[in-house]
Length: 312
Ligand code: CP
Image (tube, rainbow, N blue to C red; front, side):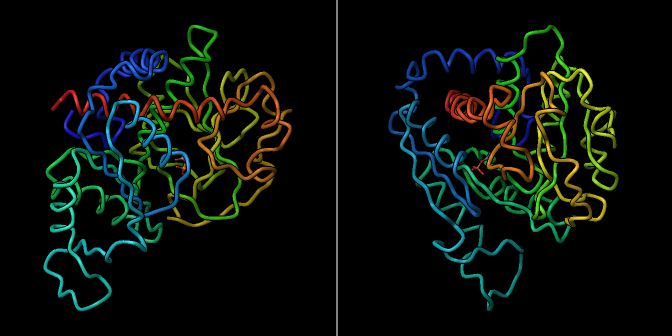
């Protein structure tokens, strides 16, 4: 594996999950592997979990993490080829990626979509530019269309909490006041398609994710029907894909409640808006495994960094 930018970079998800569980038992076992290696974390957008857990993962491997908030702190970056740079951008990605590659052995990037231009967002301009112009491996810390570190985390968490041979997992849309990206939903779908689970998606009409992602995964537009016999309910808001980037439904009936959840475990990537996405009665009880889920962000990131370091 040269880069980790998509769930499709995982060759055998079950083997990865088992390896992550071993790392979790002894996080400092490979502390010499990253000695004198530097991880650069470049953030075009806000973060709490990704920023801290990826640094923690690097430290567990003996690496030195360095972090930069690109938006605001760096020069405005240009991604188009052949542009006359007489506007707001002061540095081209060709120079920037090459320069950062001299300081870092691995570069991790977070760059959200515009949600205004589907074609441009799906081209993954920022992530692919780093892949093209950097001389070192690239890790996706949430791009326009995917969040593979989160999805690996989610797969590990489901495996840890599974009590039956083939659990039923539901990805449920929930309301939100803002237009949010599809990245978490997309990567979660792709991860579940690789796992031994009965997997369905629940979302209102007009909110189906890209058919190129969902493929033959069943999609319910009736949440109650989808939740029947669920072992895990993974909740996330996303904006419409069809009416690209728009909020077309704010139906509060889709909020996750204790009653709807029944005996299922509640998962969410966080941050989550209480009593908008999910009621307190879920988050404040044993039904919720979101804190343990967030803990696993470290081990998912550590596994990815370990594999990239071992690859040389
Ligand atoms: N789940 C997640 O990526 O959290 P942050 O946005 O806080 O990094």
